[in-house]
Image (cartoon, rainbow, N blue to C red; front, top):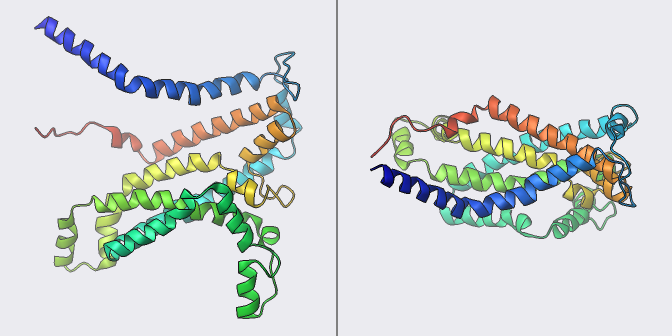
Length: 306
């Protein structure tokens, strides 16, 4: 019997290596490896020459005392993440999921497919569409509507309200992922719960409050954590739509570290900034994990069904 148990344990370890081994190698190469490289570079003086002459703490001393843009970029990042997450990536995504599951299935599927088109399109195409919409001249879509339909003067939102522009642009495309996750969660709710609620006289709002939303606790918690971490390092659409401007008005921390490294040639300082961003992400993830009690999601079931 002991030999059988040992053989079974060896078989389980072999299966684990077979199935998890490739994924673990990819994680080590493309997630842990870059963090280690970034950690090493942050304590060097590497610049455009790619030469390292000494190990130093000067990059962190510079952040603490001589970088006047650091606090502003961190504050902007906090506003960007909180607004995009709270208004679009979770709340608006939840609204989209509830609405598209309340209409006839074909109509809901069509609407979700249309909403997913920007996510399936190249980033440059999505950004170009926003640039056309926001063009400050009369040829821009928004100004065509304002001038010809309402008789207003053209507006330049990229100059007057740049933060709102990047929040809306990122939020519209970010809400699509939450929409899919929440739609799947709503579809997994047993149908008899909705029938029972209707029999008891519950209306649409009561069903949403007492049946749908409680079943979405874990998906909402997961999307909050996942989207927070994604937005912390997101700058692609900001770079394409506003280029971080005007001046530094939309230069979030991730874009700031990118520019220090790849535009200014300060690779070591950019690595140090990125290391700070990694630390912020870890703290945010652990804080949200604890706040939302996500450990309960991973607990073993108390009742085993045979």
